[in-house]
Image (cartoon, rainbow, N blue to C red):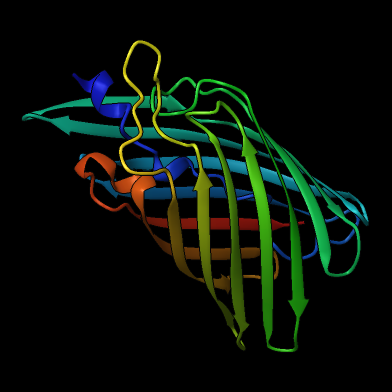
Length: 247
């Protein structure tokens, strides 16, 4: 019963965010260590994602990164519930700064042990562009996730705006996903298209510098479209907190 139920879920919490951000990479020799905790509600699913990551600019034009997430989720059906805990899709990435405003990225997503993660390797790549103003940053990006044709393959594009204030930054992002992403774990079950595989994401966040080297990032995200709501599922809602140590 639960196996058939999770085939309908396109897990909002594991949707990739290419690279760490959409602005030019850090200076050579600089980097960040990050810790993340997030809560996702997408009835009948809810749960917590805990993750750690690191990125480092080895050269003026090259950034290396890694991200290790663990998921602790519960799915309810017909008065019963089942837990899905374990390693989600770990990520390693490269980002190339090809000019002041343009960047390229490629990320590899490893199979996870959690049943709600994708169980096949996937590659993601794309192009970023950013405009840096005195009190704002406007970023645009387009990318492609190249995984299993049914579970993890789609085109996406989006835009992000950061408003730079005296003591904090306000961020907004909108992303559209278009592709074949349909279901998880199709083997042995029907994978009929149930109305399309497109979706969108809208997020708002705020960033504070706690010290000269520590930054706190708080965010809320909502998703919609057939990718998330097929089969009568609720639209997903997620809250996240990230802390960064800059070195």
